Picture 1 (cartoon, helix red, strand yellow):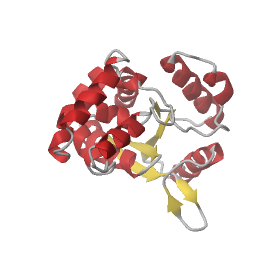
Picture 2 (cartoon, one colour):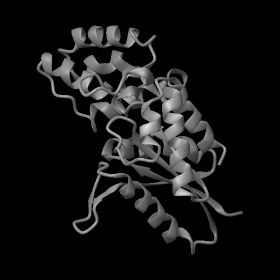
Picture 3 (cartoon, rainbow, N blue to C red):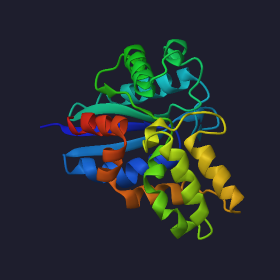
Length: 229
């Protein structure tokens, strides 16, 4: 039986850490080996992390696919972990999706267009609603453990979340109202600096995968598809 390998193309270091520390262990129980790779921002300088344009995403996926073609004893699958927030304008179906008010239908439209355009066997597209920090909003109660001055910050962020029926995935993607910007601004008011790759990952770890899946239905659907590999 061929070894099942899931190759995850991550937008940044935080997403990669999340995959390595949360998804990798969970999927190992399913007999799936998880490998990660950061998006390549500058191929000549070998700089990785962040999306500048859509061809960058498509090119990295196709390159990875070609690299694994000769490995006949392995069954390779591919997925992405990229944010809906600040998605490049040249992304497939971007303009059509922008007209859709329902966030879940919007991201579904983009993922379907991504899958069709990439046209690669074993590919499971995933775009995070609206960005990684939506997962951090699932664990607001843990913020004071990393930022002792953040008690009032938690109250303010919870009030913001209540406007979206307590659903972190519906926190919008505005320049000043995206999940990360809300965290950054509120913590800055408390004279704290949000450390995405440290507190942002540790808080999500403490929340746990089960609780994340209960709070975030689009995220849960992605994990389900990965488990079905």
